[in-house]
Length: 250
Image (tube, rainbow, N blue to C red; front, top):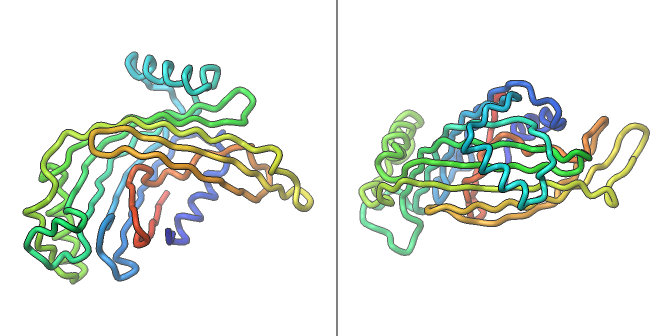
């Protein structure tokens, strides 16, 4: 995935998980900057992080049960993240008004999401649990949003939104586990160190389910063993190679 430099800079600002004071972030994820407009074509999200534990009784029961199963039962609450966003998907050619059954359908998702992060007592593992609810179809407002932006930036008007995915109440739960790998971490020169961490992420929902994994290499000074992911759009499932670019403002 091609990522704008501003996202990298924002990621570096979030290297320490202990910096959990209140913060707000806006993410714009759009492929128009690379002169393409297909598949996962746009995402916007406003997120804020809060160090105060404001979970209700239901959220405490759910996260507690999940942590006991995932091995983070003794972890301490680090911070919560609350997000509001919209995702947009289109076929490869948006100038065709007729249905395109062999291409990706028009679809939108308008959602709210809550995530809670927990750090293990030894600081070697970080667990993120999330719950998302939203709406697809016309209630997602993806059609008027794309048409408005295309008028503003003088891009071709999308013609096939009459065939978008129908209106559905979309729900999803997700879990992520980041674990430090001390065997592949150590000093490089002076106070500069290399930290290696592996992570897996899984989500289950009625409109989106997936599993993913990766390896993260971080170089710097005074780094924690494991760090949270940047507060961008996690559950977007870009697919393909034209996933666009992200820019995040803090």
